[in-house]
Length: 276
Image (cartoon, rainbow, N blue to C red; front, top):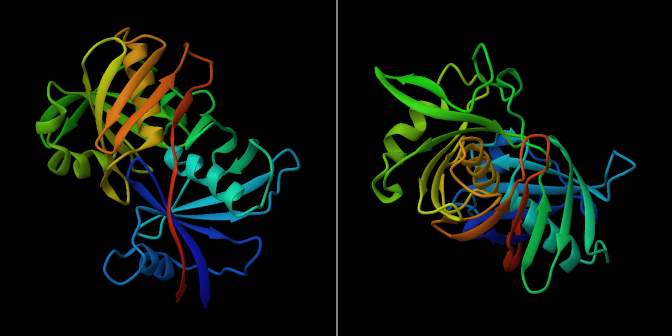
């Protein structure tokens, strides 16, 4: 199978973009792993597949696969790259798009330059819907990890996130603690783990250990979840700039029941073909 693809990234969180509208694509977990392999394939954090919509209210549908071949519900950086991809490949002439994902509909707005704003929808905070094992909804929960107890927030942005506050994001135990929380039994679908350092009410720093991937240079849904977690605790304002290793995202959330808006860049690296 010969596939045409586009390599893109959002703040260094990189993707292989596949157009399944103008070419026939049949992917299996091993083919996804081959595409994502940085030595034997193209190399990426996730593979994004663009399809025709099933929902009549949507312009497109896209599916998201982690580097290990597992399919996930949502990806903020991927959403921004998707918006640029369908414009650059002339699949649409619109600047405002409604997109169908496994997590529901997203609304995307292409702005000047490489900036894309995404309405990520309202965060899910009810533990059973994250999903997270807890009796009652709360801004934070104690989490026992190998005998040490950490304070975490549990938020879903269409995919589950655990957010921890740290004093210094540079020295946070991301590689050690990330995998332990990712597979913690209280998160039955596994979880993305964010390590958040607050600098002011308008500025924060974040590193994210993504389930099925490991630490990435940026995580859009992780930045949204971190802003929500900090806002629930009264630690940040409605709008906060979150700096990830790959660069900054601007997140706006006015409170429970309201949508989260994420704004940041999407960059095309190159186009190519690969035989699988």
